[in-house]
Figure: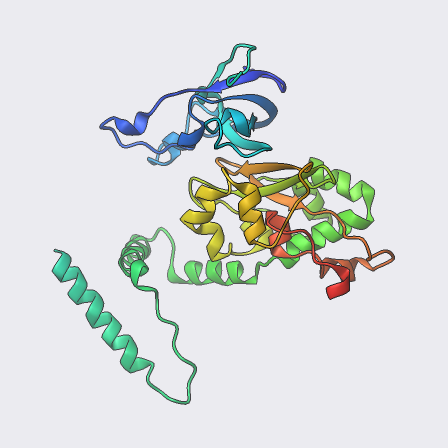
Amino acid sequence: MIARFNPGDRVRVRADWPERGSARVHLRTPGYLRGRIGVVERMHGVFADPEKLAFGKPGFPKRTLYMVRFDQRDVWPPGAAPDGTLVADIFDHWLEPAAKERQNG
Amino acid sequence: MADGKHTARAARHHDHVHAAHSHDAHAAIESSEPLAEYRYLLEAIQELLVAKGVFNADDVRRQIELMDTRNAATGARLVARAWVDPAFKALLLKDSRAAASALGIDVADMPDVLVLENTPTRHHVVVCTLCSCYPKAILGMSPAWYKSAAYRARVVKDPRGVLKEFGTELADDVEIRVCDSTADLRYLVLPMRPAGAEGWSEERLANLVTRDSMIGVSPAASPAAS
């Protein structure tokens, strides 16, 4: 499988909320990071899709897993953000390329 | 329905009290009230899986026994070796599975563990906001606070405040990197080697490597205190 992103790429976590639909879902993408922009820190490898494993399926197609680094100011509202950074592991199908400009100016 | 459940729980609780009422014996450990219904569910599912032959009762017992042998001493051995052996440290940061194998640690059923090195300018703290992912194979069972909703919700948005509550105050110029263990990897923090332990043996150094320092809520223990 060819990785869609490389370390250093700016990515946005999809602002999608499948849990609000009627179907039962199992998601590994934290709600507080949906719609947030970060930078790919590293590629962890390719793993069976937990969203399918959770329902007893084999987990295909397998998904590339990335460690994505966020500036805390890009995660929390202005005034409520701590200093520092946050990393989380996000599967490929939850990421989309992001533009160059910073989120909060 | 709620009444029925309550009655069943009360009856069970009543049994426990009677069974535990010897004045000479240790007080029996009671399961906490909010978990009682999940415990019934767990036991029912376990009995069904045994009845269906998916595994047997001895498999369950052996797994519990194995889990109980695991503790933070394993992680401490990895860290102490990394403190005294730069080549081992490089391997640990690159391939923790290979590093653990080199120390004779059984990692066959361990999920991938990524080791994060604390430095004078960057401090890592680990959380799993979605559930309670934890490197059990090398740290044993996670502490109750790690699984608490309060820790999981607060450490991502106020890491300095949470660390302060653990007695850890970091200089303003130290970057705090919160590591949310959201998927297939587990995280282990490699704490900084404290000053004042120069010339110490690896075994002695391992005593400074606390569980909490490998989660990242505190630094390694001070040599002066041990």
